[in-house]
Amino acid sequence: MGMSFFIIFLIFPFFFFPLVNSFNNSAADSLDALLEDFAFDTLVEHRRHTGVLYKATSPANLSGIQVSVLKLRSRTMWNKGANFSHFSIPPRTTSSPHVRRLALVYQDLGNWSSEYYIVPGYKLVTSVVGFMAFDASNSSAKSITRLNLTTRGKPISIDFHNLTVGESVRSQVRCVIYAANGTTSLSEMSLPGVCQSREQGHFSVVIPEGELKGKQKLCYWWFIGFVLAFAVLVLGGITVVVLVRLLRTKKIQIMERHADEDLALASRWVGQSKMPSAAVTRTLPVLESGCFT
Ligand SMILES: *[C@@H]1O[C@H](CO)[C@@H](O)[C@H](O)[C@H]1NC(C)=O
Ligand SMILES: *[C@@H]1O[C@H](CO)[C@@H](O)[C@H](O)[C@H]1NC(C)=O
Ligand SMILES: *[C@@H]1O[C@H](CO)[C@@H](O)[C@H](O)[C@H]1NC(C)=O
Ligand SMILES: *[C@@H]1O[C@H](CO)[C@@H](O)[C@H](O)[C@H]1NC(C)=O
Ligand SMILES: *[C@@H]1O[C@H](CO)[C@@H](O)[C@H](O)[C@H]1NC(C)=O
Ligand SMILES: *[C@@H]1O[C@H](CO)[C@@H](O)[C@H](O)[C@H]1NC(C)=O
Ligand SMILES: *[C@@H]1O[C@H](CO)[C@@H](O)[C@H](O)[C@H]1NC(C)=O
Ligand SMILES: *[C@@H]1O[C@H](CO)[C@@H](O)[C@H](O)[C@H]1NC(C)=O
Image (cartoon, rainbow, N blue to C red; front, side, top):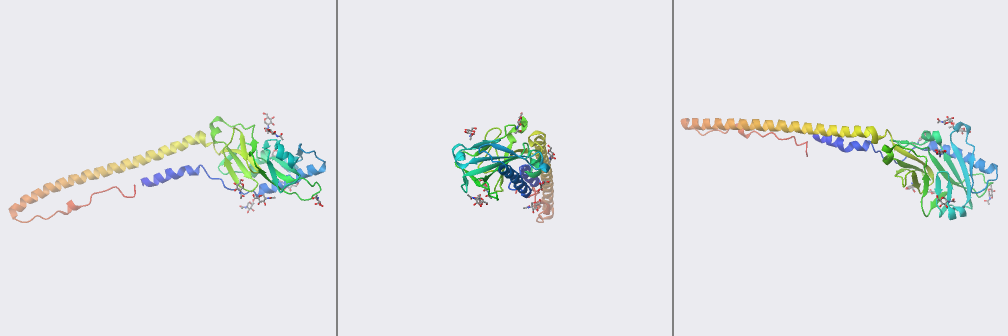
């Protein structure tokens, strides 16, 4: 009985720290494709200057989402990196395949963030922002070609400068990275309000759902305390029962010894050998072996 309480005690914390591995992002992928089309229309409609972030018109049925596009030369990205909105791409970044010009499509999903991106057990505390790199060297090309980015130096950093979370949850804030290759991961912030990534993709900041560190954490410790107290109570009860039984057995043994003496006395009278009493060889009560083995 005691053992099952210890098992509960051991596995209980895992319910509160679920591991994140993947999420179904087919809806997010089709949203990406739609927003990329709008971004490229913006790029193609007008001859755009390199190095300037242009706001794209986002679909009317998705108002609240911001889309922007930045065109830049690969050589510039290699030499200086790129800074736009929340993102800072460090120098020594290359694309594969290599292209002369690339387009970075930036998104801020605003109030749509939690419609498309979720992390089980956590809640978003900033909107989801993201960017993807595309080939922009051929403005007459019909198809949109995604590029991989490789940073040889520092990682890409994402600055959530407007992040405001309460003091109590500050230590539990995590960066969530939905990498373009489909992997979702959680990581600690490198600096307050700053996330880092080696991959392009989507990014946000999360805290455990229900703010476990606040009221619920107290409840959690109350529960642990309760379980422990209960276990102690049960073990104490078992100990008392065992002690009482041991004492009673002892008493019986003493009584039996007295009885034997009486019998021995009687045997002198009768001249017969005394018979061993069955009651003396009775097994002593022990703790149920299931408790501690
Ligand atoms: C993801 O969700 C879509 C519908 O939203 C469903 O058709 C698809 O099978 C799901 N994929 C996986 C891997 O769960
Ligand atoms: C928004 O409208 C576009 C067409 O302009 C459509 O393809 C897309 O599915 C719509 N999205 C939503 C979320 O309604
Ligand atoms: C981007 O910002 C960093 C510092 O925040 C700076 O060192 C770098 O030169 C900037 N790059 C460009 C292209 O503006
Ligand atoms: C987001 O806000 C816009 C108005 O700014 C609204 O039209 C849209 O329906 C909202 N989206 C969601 C998912 O609530
Ligand atoms: C640009 O794209 C167009 C249309 O796809 C193609 O005909 C042309 O050869 C491409 N030019 C270069 C330099 O790749
Ligand atoms: C980008 O990298 C992934 C593996 O991480 C690979 O499967 C994909 O083909 C690459 N794409 C390009 C355009 O190189
Ligand atoms: C950050 O906050 C300032 C004002 O506090 C606001 O003007 C700005 O738009 C905010 N930026 C973002 C990305 O939310
Ligand atoms: C995606 O990229 C991340 C970070 O570079 C890497 O750890 C992970 O293994 C990649 N996943 C796949 C499926 O390629």
